[in-house]
Image (cartoon, rainbow, N blue to C red; front, side):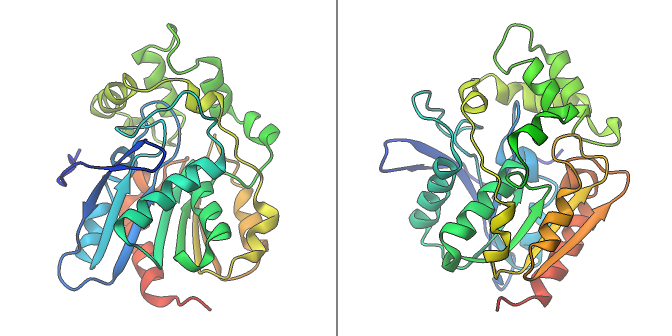
Length: 281
């Protein structure tokens, strides 16, 4: 799997917390900036989620900023703050401010999709477009906790003695339709990252149901979903479409929670087409 070619950088926020990110500049004439927002779960990080996608967007002329959210990767992991949607959004705003970014496209999966929606609702002027993969934040907490993947993650809490490398491997297979995608290299990568994480982020995570607010967005939105998603129910795609606005959707058969990993070429190609052919009202 490709290693991150960009130099690690760290932003010190006004809260005294550090955010890790990498900045991947466009090849040739720059067409815009994409900010990639990863999902939650044991061993998650920005690069781990999007390593199969960045090069394609760079080649097409897009600057790509990939960062680790609070509690993940090399970003700080505070244990005295609840990880609310507002807290995650504020972290993203701090990064955008530090880099002087306005009018960006947000690319978010799962938790990252909820954070993208949260920023677009709170600061619509800062966002041009949204590309979302099985976004969180559009179902009730009860609906999410009824999903097999979430139940498995709760059964084996991150950081507990029973959360072994084998347990991690089994959990990762629930994220995809084809279990062969979860090879030893991927498990090693996530297991190594997991060693620096703690359970506080998942224990205090509070993401509201934003589905009733989707209609407030006038941004072009492209949403991907796998029919075999075991973490965020695929019925969410209809909530996005019925929300109104400029929403396009790709519903993929034989696909789990990680569209961008299971079908990277399709995801990259379709996203680039969307970026090139849509305009915000």
